[in-house]
Length: 128
Image (cartoon, rainbow, N blue to C red; front, side, top):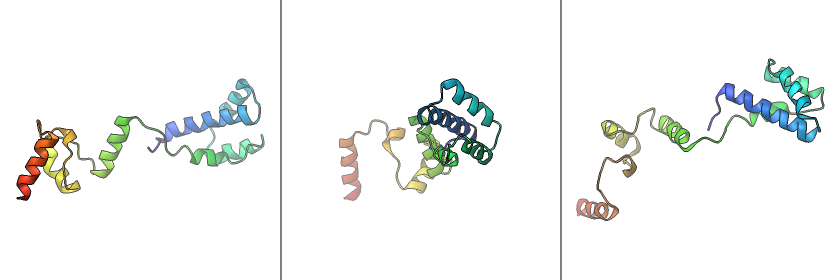
Protein backbone atom coordinates (compact mmCIF):
# COMPACT_ATOMS: atom_id res chain seq x y z
CA UNK A 1 0.00 0.00 0.00
CA UNK A 2 1.15 3.56 -0.54
CA UNK A 3 3.34 4.91 2.25
CA UNK A 4 2.50 8.25 3.86
CA UNK A 5 5.21 10.86 3.27
CA UNK A 6 6.38 11.17 6.89
CA UNK A 7 6.59 7.41 7.34
CA UNK A 8 8.29 7.11 3.96
CA UNK A 9 11.11 9.39 5.04
CA UNK A 10 11.59 7.34 8.21
CA UNK A 11 11.71 4.09 6.24
CA UNK A 12 14.23 5.63 3.86
CA UNK A 13 16.55 6.79 6.64
CA UNK A 14 16.26 3.40 8.32
CA UNK A 15 17.22 1.65 5.08
CA UNK A 16 20.12 4.06 4.51
CA UNK A 17 21.37 3.32 8.01
CA UNK A 18 21.15 -0.45 7.44
CA UNK A 19 23.00 -0.12 4.13
CA UNK A 20 25.74 2.00 5.68
CA UNK A 21 26.27 -0.68 8.32
CA UNK A 22 26.08 -3.72 6.03
CA UNK A 23 27.69 -2.45 2.82
CA UNK A 24 30.13 0.08 4.23
CA UNK A 25 30.87 -1.73 7.50
CA UNK A 26 29.99 1.30 9.64
CA UNK A 27 29.14 0.83 13.27
CA UNK A 28 25.62 1.59 14.43
CA UNK A 29 26.84 4.87 15.97
CA UNK A 30 28.61 5.94 12.77
CA UNK A 31 25.64 5.11 10.56
CA UNK A 32 23.28 6.82 12.98
CA UNK A 33 25.44 9.96 12.91
CA UNK A 34 25.19 10.06 9.10
CA UNK A 35 21.40 9.60 9.11
CA UNK A 36 21.12 12.31 11.78
CA UNK A 37 23.08 14.64 9.48
CA UNK A 38 20.79 14.03 6.50
CA UNK A 39 17.53 14.09 8.47
CA UNK A 40 16.91 17.80 7.79
CA UNK A 41 17.96 17.65 4.12
CA UNK A 42 15.63 17.06 1.19
CA UNK A 43 16.07 13.73 -0.61
CA UNK A 44 18.18 15.04 -3.49
CA UNK A 45 20.51 17.02 -1.21
CA UNK A 46 20.83 14.06 1.16
CA UNK A 47 21.53 11.72 -1.78
CA UNK A 48 24.31 14.03 -2.99
CA UNK A 49 25.68 14.20 0.56
CA UNK A 50 25.73 10.40 0.79
CA UNK A 51 27.77 10.22 -2.41
CA UNK A 52 30.59 11.72 -0.31
CA UNK A 53 30.56 8.37 1.52
CA UNK A 54 30.52 6.61 -1.88
CA UNK A 55 26.89 5.69 -1.30
CA UNK A 56 25.31 6.09 -4.74
CA UNK A 57 21.65 5.70 -5.62
CA UNK A 58 20.08 6.80 -2.35
CA UNK A 59 17.23 8.34 -4.35
CA UNK A 60 16.51 4.85 -5.67
CA UNK A 61 16.27 3.59 -2.11
CA UNK A 62 13.73 6.38 -1.52
CA UNK A 63 11.74 5.30 -4.59
CA UNK A 64 11.57 1.82 -3.07
CA UNK A 65 9.77 3.18 0.00
CA UNK A 66 6.75 4.37 -1.99
CA UNK A 67 4.83 1.24 -0.99
CA UNK A 68 4.78 -0.76 2.18
CA UNK A 69 3.18 -3.89 3.51
CA UNK A 70 -0.10 -2.99 5.22
CA UNK A 71 -2.28 -4.77 7.71
CA UNK A 72 -5.36 -6.59 6.46
CA UNK A 73 -7.57 -3.79 7.79
CA UNK A 74 -5.46 -1.06 6.15
CA UNK A 75 -5.48 -2.85 2.81
CA UNK A 76 -9.21 -3.56 2.87
CA UNK A 77 -9.92 0.03 3.83
CA UNK A 78 -7.66 1.34 1.06
CA UNK A 79 -9.26 -0.92 -1.55
CA UNK A 80 -12.77 -0.02 -0.44
CA UNK A 81 -11.93 3.67 -0.53
CA UNK A 82 -10.40 3.50 -3.99
CA UNK A 83 -12.62 0.90 -5.61
CA UNK A 84 -15.89 2.17 -4.19
CA UNK A 85 -15.11 5.88 -4.14
CA UNK A 86 -15.30 5.97 -0.36
CA UNK A 87 -18.62 4.10 -0.04
CA UNK A 88 -18.56 2.18 3.22
CA UNK A 89 -19.74 -1.41 3.36
CA UNK A 90 -23.06 -1.21 5.17
CA UNK A 91 -26.69 -2.12 4.74
CA UNK A 92 -27.56 1.51 4.07
CA UNK A 93 -25.24 1.57 1.06
CA UNK A 94 -26.46 -1.69 -0.50
CA UNK A 95 -27.86 -0.10 -3.65
CA UNK A 96 -24.83 2.14 -4.19
CA UNK A 97 -22.44 -0.81 -3.85
CA UNK A 98 -24.57 -3.05 -6.06
CA UNK A 99 -24.65 -0.38 -8.80
CA UNK A 100 -20.90 0.19 -8.47
CA UNK A 101 -19.67 -3.41 -8.52
CA UNK A 102 -22.70 -5.34 -9.81
CA UNK A 103 -23.10 -7.65 -6.84
CA UNK A 104 -22.78 -7.64 -3.10
CA UNK A 105 -20.45 -10.04 -1.29
CA UNK A 106 -21.97 -12.19 1.44
CA UNK A 107 -19.26 -11.10 3.88
CA UNK A 108 -21.00 -7.85 4.72
CA UNK A 109 -23.92 -9.82 6.09
CA UNK A 110 -26.75 -8.35 4.08
CA UNK A 111 -28.17 -11.82 3.62
CA UNK A 112 -28.05 -13.28 7.14
CA UNK A 113 -28.61 -17.02 7.29
CA UNK A 114 -28.10 -17.54 3.57
CA UNK A 115 -25.98 -20.66 3.26
CA UNK A 116 -24.20 -21.65 0.08
CA UNK A 117 -26.78 -24.40 -0.47
CA UNK A 118 -29.73 -22.02 0.02
CA UNK A 119 -27.97 -19.49 -2.20
CA UNK A 120 -27.72 -22.03 -5.04
CA UNK A 121 -31.40 -22.93 -4.59
CA UNK A 122 -32.32 -19.23 -4.65
CA UNK A 123 -30.29 -18.71 -7.84
CA UNK A 124 -31.96 -21.73 -9.48
CA UNK A 125 -35.40 -20.33 -8.60
CA UNK A 126 -34.47 -16.93 -10.00
CA UNK A 127 -33.20 -18.48 -13.24
CA UNK A 128 -36.36 -20.57 -13.72
